[in-house]
Amino acid sequence: MSLLIAGSIATDHLMSFGGKFADSLVVEQLDKLSVSFLVEDLDIRRGGCAGNICFGLAQLGLRPVLVGSAGEDFGDYRSWLEKHGVDCDSVRISEDLHTARFVCTTDATMAQFASFYPGAMSEARLIELAPIAERVGEPTFVLVGPDDPQGMVSHTQECRQRGYDFIADPSQQLAFGEGEMIRELVDGAAYLFSNEYESHLIESKTGWTADEILERVGTQVITLGPDGVRIVGRDQEKIEVPAVPNVAAVEPTGVGDAFRSGFLAALEWQLSHERAAQVGCVLAAYVVEQVGTQEYTFTHEQFVARLTDAYGEAAAADVRPHLLAS
Ligand SMILES: Nc1ncnc2c1ncn2[C@@H]1O[C@H](COP(=O)(O)OP(=O)(O)OP(=O)(O)O)[C@@H](O)[C@H]1O
Ligand SMILES: [Mg+2]
Image 1: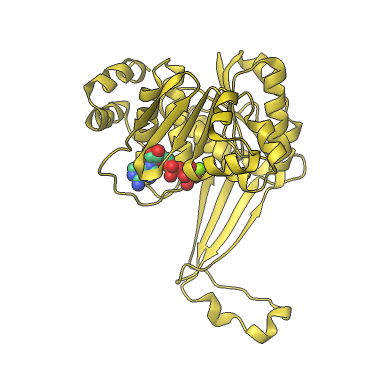
Image 2: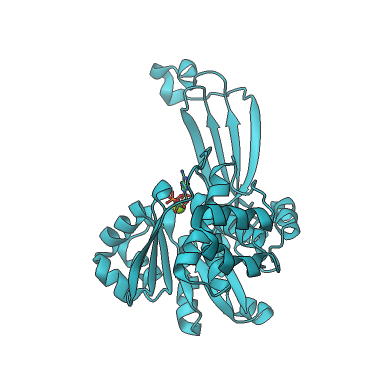
């Protein structure tokens, strides 16, 4: 059995400028705009939703399979993920495009100049899941995360054709997709993940009511930021799990991905949805306390201790055998 995580693989290149961009812009000369800023630092962070989710799963002792498209420059990132236990053997390497990159410069007033280069990500549509499943074994789930839109659609269609259970996780791509594409991504998913804002976006874009969505997906998992998570499903009671208390939030980037890692790990351990949400919330708490999406560390003892503090001994008792045995 295997867990296939399809989605973006990207790096963020973040620079900070000590002054104010506005001081360098001459409003009357905007048609001849050409400015350059001497920045103070450059921070390069590994990211992309699929990279982040795989990293989190591997931190919990699983061996997820990263499915995505990167460039020849993927080498360092690959080594990092492999060192942490992620199977990168099915990452497609583009012959002529670089790995997706977000480049952003922020000034002292938090004004930003940013660009996103999708690059090799746009070749995700060329990836076929069947040969991957042949290599690693029939997937328990294929998560279809934000990626090249055509790639997301083709992965979802392939899952339906081959009968792989899939998890729809369109998140940031919802803003750009049309209703028909989003219906295609969601229909028939075993799980649909989103935050609360995105859950409304899914309803408005698909034209389906909340109940109609539930008729099409097994279970819908809606994260509520510091308020935790709500799980609703066709033939199940609504579950609400609070977030981990007393978290010193530093930077939220990547919390959603970390939550998914924890949730999926618990599904692989065949725990209940309530436990899955709790494991997800604990992993998300680690991420929100760090700058960067793959910078957190913990021992499995610490993870179980934190789960015990937040959700009690019964939760810990279910999770402990999986973590402290791995
Ligand atoms: N301030 C916080 N304190 C504790 N836990 C948090 C906090 N913010 C988020 N979380 C945890 O992270 C989970 C996911 O958060 P959220 O709903 O904000 O995801 P998201 O909007 O997809 O985030 P992003 O897309 O920025 O990664 C929540 O269910 C919660 O468990
Ligand atoms: Mg999100």
